[in-house]
Image (cartoon, rainbow, N blue to C red):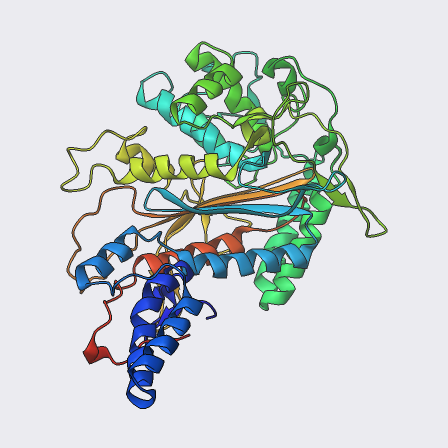
Length: 514
């Protein structure tokens, strides 16, 4: 690896960073000076030694002691080599889909260790992407709204199993096959309510679900599955409700888009991803909190220190806001159509940055881990660990479109830890939510610390949060970013859990340039 120093046989993930060359250079070059001095004479040897040393770095210091080396390694940001791997993965997906711009952020054990933008936030004005770039987060709005719902539930202001009409009496009671049915908040947050998504035709939805199930049983090759997913995504953005331009003054008016439509299935019996269901949830939040949904969410964002997360409104001046793009029928990049998000605040109507999303992911991770043994002296999490366990537990009869190994929980997708055969593929537990809206794609992924195996002795409890959080935002629609985010998270986790590098010593042999 160019520009780094490592010892033979050591993992690339533990190489000394490039910027440590100057300090290592003095130790290494003086050795060469001594060797040259033996052959050419003391004066000539010292001259050549000093010349070679100057070529390596102007500021030379004495060799680092073992304790100094360990201190240097402790102060080094985790995942420095992993950032290069992550950048390559990000560039690959950007090139593959032809995205104008893409931004990534990674946090390890609660600390942001890498954030970077590639390409353009505004193609026409040649404005580059950067960590502060604000983009649509689309359906990542759902985990944000789920946090508000969970907080109200913890305070006793919201009953997850009560009929929604308790909170939204104007929403009509529903029947399915002539039988009266009940829709609850718990069913809504897991997409089990039967409320439609953007397709209005009930028969089409039912036929498509049956077709998808059949295709899943027939399609075995990964490449064929990806083709099917791309066709499905392309068709998804043909629905006219994605392109609503009207501004809805309140949630009650947004409910009229779907409140009188028939249910797709009996509540609780099947899974159907529905952003409209989350619009109904925003009405529930308003009633339970006794304030407008946006006011409640802005207060939550302030509490979580997410100061650049705001509603996707057109009138306010929002600094560093990106523009959004699509490819037309001729394959040319064009500006995405104008849309208004006021009909879907809770399910897909917020803007944010990767840095704010990392903060949110760390809050969730901390909340889930804070009461582990030996951590009672720490501050409480925003939500209780029991609450996090509830909302991160897979729900029966759900599925995850962006990862077939996962299930939907409550406002989150979850892949559980598991391994079927020894020495074969192993699944790590992780939490995720992707987003797709007009002109934008996104993902937020949380990879908690790995649990010890049954034969391993449990490690000492670390200070929470322990794990990796990855956020990726892109200003092009229909880009599946989940697989890339998972690869990046696993790479940073690999570095995070690697054994600490040892100081150089005579027993280890010479240090070589990589």
